[in-house]
Length: 313
Length: 295
Image (cartoon, each protein chain N blue to C red):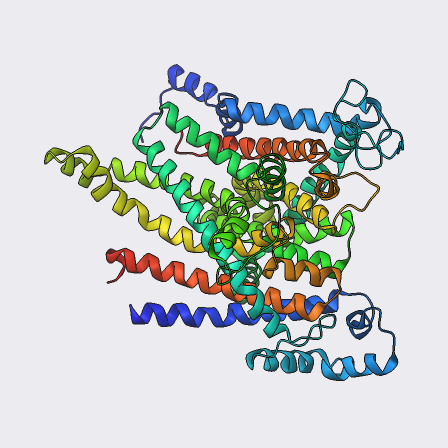
């Protein structure tokens, strides 16, 4: 197990290296002088010279990369040109908001995806199964931002049950925080619910057709016990790992969801940075997102081994 | 040496053996979902091509006397914040969405398939380098990568297509590489190598045609994802720029008028949903039809 963990961890290093090179080179896709672009509307030669010196833009590319990655490894992602704040502080400030949204979205995705997936497999080819299939197709095909807008029209504009936008921290007012994030969390979890549902159904069908379930039935166990204690326990193994990967997808989905619901999280940070041409923030956010995503992949792999004793040998 | 007798029954069987393409088509036709998807795609393509002929109004024509009018006989889908006909804009918007979906995937296929063929066939250092690059690109969530690329390239439909295409490339690179590695050890590839075919010919003539089915399935599903990505970028202001219509940018504008003109958001969203659902249905149908385990 330790060897597996060590090997898997070592594999992260080249991936992270390539990710960092790719993100670093993004800045050089810009036509013209990156220092001018980073300065935005500021045309003072002194400011431009300062940016050029700060980001080592007057040096060859490999040296620029070494200087940049050296800073990143020491927690220095640069400074936001617009907000005059360090990118690290901005990320640390926004990440908990998105994390709250992602956890709530995961609760929705698991509750809907697992329940409908198990039901569809147990009642295969029934009306329930077809309904779950339609639900999965709906989840995969609905654009996040459209679902968000339609829910705002229904629950905020027509029914006036929930706030249309804004965010309240759970430490400030727990229930208002739930009210302000319940719609965006549902929107964010919708597509993942569909993916989890499809995988749960397929894993449950495999489990229900296996020999150990046949044996459990032959022993005279109740159907409820066969499904909950025998089939589901094994069927959920691949689903748990998929859940970890979906958590990473929420970082991507949060970009649109936070924009629609005006939630000041990680996703809104990157969109605002794009429009302000705040490239240090764009680079920092993409790098942090990719790192979190890679770590979640690692966690998914480790979980798969942990919950599957046959792979531990 | 034993004589090989002519067996008319065997000859008849051989004559009636279906080609893989025909068998796949027969299986595809049996799948109602795939047919419905295909029919909707054909309808949207026809709408996009015939847009100037079938749109009831000029999609850019503003009317200050018809600002934010609800659906009526005059304007079936209503009008927007500057009095433009929403039906006309949805019809013309189909062009941007379908073009973005198809062109982005063509870019991804154009880069990903040759690189995947090279990595899978040559192996060694080239494969290791391309695989690490693929891992790095797949490590960045798809939309975030597309947004970052679009941010650096600039906001326009063309640049959005390039951004989405580049972000989709690793999927095709990895799929092609995997398929090539499975196919290159087959006997017919060994035979092609034994008779002295050059490597490029083996890759293009003997391997590529045999890995097309999974690529076709992935292309259909990727078009669905690319249409959503284009709409997302346009929604964020990084895709199609006003006044040219696109479903995503229409939804962006609609956001500001949800309480008094909700129809502005309904129709473009429904159009995205139907198109994406159709490509998903077709992709699922193709996957089942091309699956050799399904007989």
